[in-house]
Length: 204
Image (cartoon, rainbow, N blue to C red; front, side):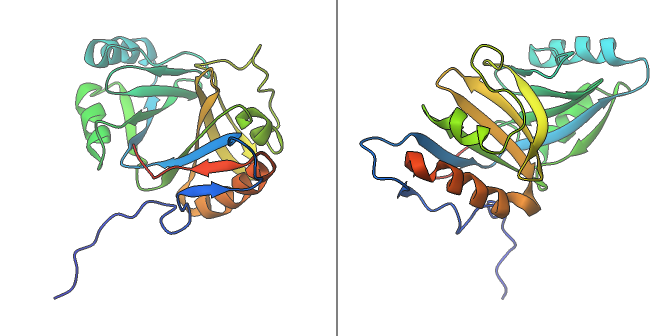
């Protein structure tokens, strides 16, 4: 009897926990893959953006931002990716449940597309996180202009990425297409190597 199909993290067998890179007294960068997330693309229907924001706030306690920002509530976060377009991310509503929940709560207001199987999310934190990303990211991450809650859609080493700042450590989450996760990870670890980096076990 064959084994049932199981979902594997995008970086399974690639992001091996441990200490890597330069032998510094403490790592400049901490990396881990975020797994088990619900991810969905949300696009407001014509003329429905304000009604969508009101419905989302009533349902989840937060309204999708009207700018490239990351706004997080207790169950869900919205990241602005374009005019009246967002990515929704949830650690509580994985396995396709997020898209189903959004579709039910935003009926008639938005088009919803499940993205959970097609994206990978990597968290990078630490005192050298900003310098690591700056090697390939053509936007300004200076603490005076890119702060907790800031978000952007850009490219790193010719690979599309959506990123947002989680806190002032600084900590960033980076979302890439799953098919590019291995290549992106190779770039990221190479860039972090001079600072020394830790890879933590995958978690939500």
